[in-house]
Structures are given as C-alpha cells and as structure tokens.
Image (cartoon, rainbow over all chains, first blue to last red; front, side, top):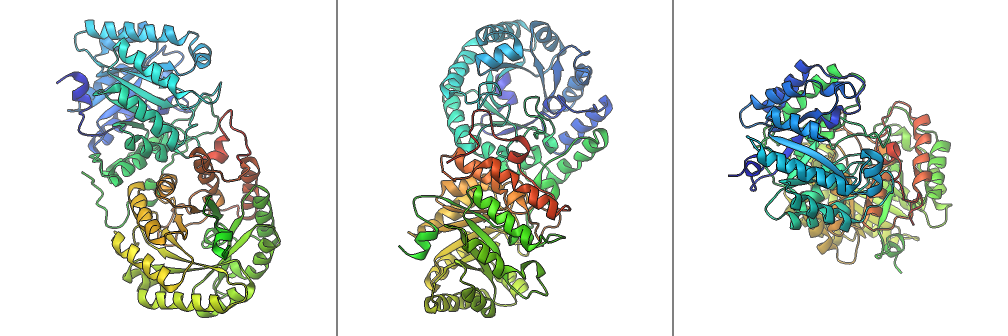
Length: 315
Length: 315
C-alpha cells in the first residue's frame, strides 16, 4: 500500500478539518497551542482523522502557525490520524519534510493574473516548484503525500470567470510533476454546483486512481450544494472547517470554509459513511468560541441538532 | 391557457417569495401593512412575481395576517404578479375565493401522527377537504390555482423518517382530488439532497404536465443543496424567503425557509433564468431589518455580493 492509499483509501470518502490552517488565516485572535491540541484531540474523539495543521511560513508574518511542529506532533501521536502542512517555498518544503508531517500541501493559481499578483511568479514557475517538491519527497525518508491545490479554480478574484480547460490542463501538469493528489479550490466561493460537478468530473478522469480533493468556501451559500455535486462527480476527499471558520482575504465579510459538521451530515445523508459522532463534533465548537470569541461560527446542524430518529453516532 | 399554465409556464422555473406568510409565522414583531407593501413592490421591481401573502386564519390568533386582503390587492395591482394565500378550513377557503387571490394553498400532513397532532384530523379527512376546496374552485368565478402542500414530506417532527411511497401515494390522491399542483415540503429541514431528488423525481412523474413545487427549510444547512437536487429532478417551482426569514415551531432556534436570494443565485448558476436583479433584491432586506430588528437574516450572497464578472441583473 502506498502512502497516499494509506491516507486516502479508495473505498471511502475522507473529510479533512482545515480550520487549524485555512480557518486561522484571518482570525483576529489566535488559539493557544494547548487549545489547538484540545481541538484536535476532541475532533479525533469525534471521528475526524485528517487535519490541516498549519503552514511553514515565516512566524513573524504568520504567528498563528509558529507552533506548527508541535501541532504536527500532536496529530502524529493519535493512531490513524494524519497531519497536513502547507508550504509555499523550498525552505518551507524542507522544514515540512524534516517535520515528518504525513502530507505536504502546496498551491498553484488557476490564472496567470492571480499567480503573478499573489505569488509573484508564473504558473509555470509554480509548477516547476511543485516538481522540485516531489523530487525532495522522493529523496526523503518518510515520503509524505504531496497535494497541490489549484486555487481560484472555479472563479478568480482578479479576472472573474476561469476557463475549466485551463484548470484541467494544470491538473494534468501537476500529476505529471509527481503530485499524489490535486485539490480543486473554490477559493472565493464563486461557483455553483453545476460548475463544480463538471470540473470535478473532468479532474477525476485525469486523476485515475489518485484522489481529487474539493476545497470549498461557503462565501455565497453554495458550499454544501457544491460539495454534493462534487461527491456526485467522484470527489472522495473534501475539506471543511468546524463552524465554517475562516474568512477570505479577497471577500471581506464572507464566510469561510464549508461547515465541517454540515458537510459530514450531507455525506451521511447521501449514504457515505464518515465515522463522525455528531454530538461530540458539535461540542468541539465550544473550544473555538472560547478561544476566538470575535469569530462568527456558522452551521445548521449545530443550531438545530440531528433530525428525530437519527442516531448521533453515524458510523 | 389554463390558470395554472398562466402562473407556472412549463418552460421556465418560478421562485416564490413565501416570507410574507411562512416567514412571518413565528417572528416576534410584525411588519406594518405599509412595510409589507413596500416589500412586495420592491421585490417586484427586482423581478419577483409570486408572493405567498398570508393566510385566512382567525386574526386574533394570527394578527400578522389580519391585513391579508389588502396585501392580496397590492399584489394584484402589479402586472404579472400573483398572490398565494393559505387556507386550512372551509371558512378560510370561502374567504380566499371571495378575495380573488390568484392561488389558494392548503396543507396535508405526510404522516397520520402529524395530521392528528397538528390538525386534529386524519389525512383522509384532510384530502376530503382538499377535494371540497377544488369543487368550490370549480364553482368560483375566477377559478384560482389550487396548490396542496404535503408537510413533513421528507421527515416528520413526530415520527422521524417518512416513507417516500406514502408521500407519492398522497401526491396521487391530491391530484385525483383536483389540485393543480402539489408542493413537497421539508417542513423541519430533515432531508439531504439524495432524498429530495428521489422524492421529487417520483412526484414529477405522477404530476405529468402539472407543476411540482419544492418547499425547503434550511434548518440543517442543506437548503440550497436540496434545491439543487430538486431542480435536477424536475421541480420547476421553488419556495424561498428573503434572508431566510421564518423559524420553525418544531425546531427552536432553527433557520427558516431557504434563502431566496441564494436560491436565485443557485438557479442562475445552473442556467435557469430567474429574471432577478440581485442588487435590487438584496436591497429589500433593509425593509425586513428595520421592521423586524429582532430577526436574524441569513444568506451568503447578501454578505459577499456577486462574483466578479457577474452582472447584477441576471436575465
């Protein structure tokens, strides 16, 4: 069994908690390391196994991720749990590889305009960096999964609509560069379910046996509908954050990632087992509320509870 | 052209604003008649044509609908706009017929238990009342559309899961009784998109050329995903309320109807023309905010605005 098959078995779907990284990108106060650890342990007890834990970026610019190594260790201490860390340059890649994190994530922009504006490099240069990352992975001892996201894949904050054939071309290039999986990201929440379904279906076809992840933001209320379309189109890895934590630098006032607990409810309603204990999962919101009192938490399930006749423990 | 074909042409979808009835069922303060009229006129200017305006129920129990006749007249004064009024007994039916409202709505419970608990009658007796309503319609001068909703059709607050074959049996009985259309209602927001899609597909098959309406609540965050599934399954009439106004007596703290403006965005994203001007539509939320300051308003589009490169006027 390869590392990617271990993290992402092809006979089940995987929901990933990205609140500890994407969710903390813009919050006004940062949770303590101890609170992050409780967050992870309590979600683990609720059945969650995949955690995006932070990024290897300069701690003076992103102090919320200064403890990323400790958080990686927390996840690694839990049997069957996997940590994911974001890297955006070769220094970060080397630090991530040295940390022993199970998965290294990186990002390529869907549009040339966003790539230049956001990362000051061309998409071609970004893909060359991904290739270098894959070479470093191959030379490493523990060989983490390498995942490249395509940001703005369903609409770009700079140019607006994005040509899906461009995204599929980038998907091919990324697999050619050696990534184990590709994440399709609706970074600014522009898409509707038809667009998501069509793009994911195309990406799944290119990926073959490798997983396609869908990373959605609920900016315009389409998050769960888009997740449903992605599942129908064959996506088997879905990102979300507890309470929908996480704003967007390109959409002030917008909600963040798709709500993890509603996403799990969606999956269960479609017959996909998530292993999630909803009561335990919803209880973890208390940690976020006390650590980040200024942040709005979203989610229908937390407000209303499970329907009558539905057991709290799904799996 | 029959009356139902006039209100619901079979070559387009119809979004109905139900905030003035279902949305006002549980609010703490009631908008003035003048505010309701501005709400209707401003939404009309934003492209909305179908308004559920109130119910013919005792004004001492439901004072928020005491002005229903005036509101019906307001809608009737706008070219191409249609009012819908709820009735639950023969007195209400006669008053509704006398009012000249374009559509008379009524409700049958999906489960025997809810029918007895909520309306103190059997489902069979409720269907007999619907038949009587249809006879009165046939004998009336202006022959309004008759629409029967099946409440709790996707899950019941009393018994939990609902057998879809029972709902389809009731759908058949209602068409046999003479209704022009049937509304499938997820009254307590229990469903996911798979369940909605399957039930709506079955109902559409039974309905033939007649419209099936889907009435969704966003109680557990599945509203837009469920609407998307209903559209895929052939529903062409969808209810929503501006800002998701409207709680649920069976689910305290739960959000109300699916958010109208997000629903319109969903439809446009799937290629269905709604005729909605989003900027104008979102501006109408101001009336709700000033008239009902204690009510939470929901919706992603109002928070984030349209994506870059998308014109505000859709059609």
